[in-house]
Length: 412
Image (cartoon, rainbow, N blue to C red):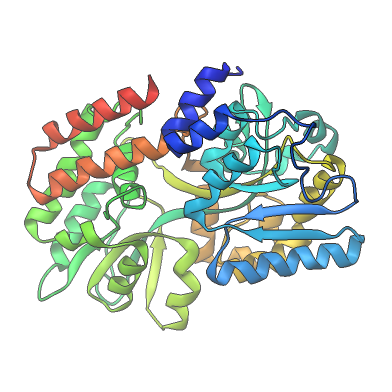
């Protein structure tokens, strides 16, 4: 359901900050003296993304290939992740959005509700390929019963196990994890590592544990929330998990695992090629279950903005980017997973370790359209509860009560 102008402004203020919301208030309608998007009317396309570091070259090489094959000039623009949403909003206030924006999957609902991206339902229906997508990534494109994006790439989280340190451990449940982690923790080796650093990144492990206990992200101060925090705090208190997790990003967690100072870790498929090159003897298991077997989705979606001067050409590029033969050449360079089942039929995805991550795409959790616009605040509140409980500054119950107050305010 479309939001009112005031609701949209409130929503964006919560997500992007007061300065940006002020800019939204000055939003100019299309036409008049507002600047036109760079690609409007000249047969070219503009494409904004936040793939920095080693991810920039593969994407921009792919776009250059499309330009060469199609004759449509595509001009990419890299905007750092931390500035991406704010830059999109500022562009929207001046009717200067690109033709295509590659957005975080969790932000799709926010941009759809603010009418910055367009409903592509009729295009998708004509295309007839939506049933090829894994359910987790595809769900992030749905807002109010309409389709506002096409999934691009994805990643999931699994439990990594060092075969030298835990050669025989069966870890199908969280009780198994607690037992295995405790059995190996000694002499500078911890049983389990994960990122618990301040902010959104540090919330993933807690959310996975919380969801496995049957939790609903709207109710952190629930039985599932208490079970999750007490489980993780218990492992810290026993020495099975280092309190250092509160300062580790996912790269640090990988280093702990690679060096053999952590017997297990919770992390995404992005690190598989590097760990194999390093010669680590490892295996990967699906995320442990408690009441639910669930992974966590990390993904990006392709969207056509409301300011596109060439929406037909933008759609042609989006569908070309999703061809299995194109993705199967591109994805290995990115260490990412296919979002389509037909793409995943390629022999390269039959590797048993990679397959664990691919198979979890159907159980990979993502916030729904109600909670997605507030997901950054909810995840930050969840990490705050983890920080308080693991550091011992607060009881799990008190930490969850404070986090719930933040969640309630974000969803009000």
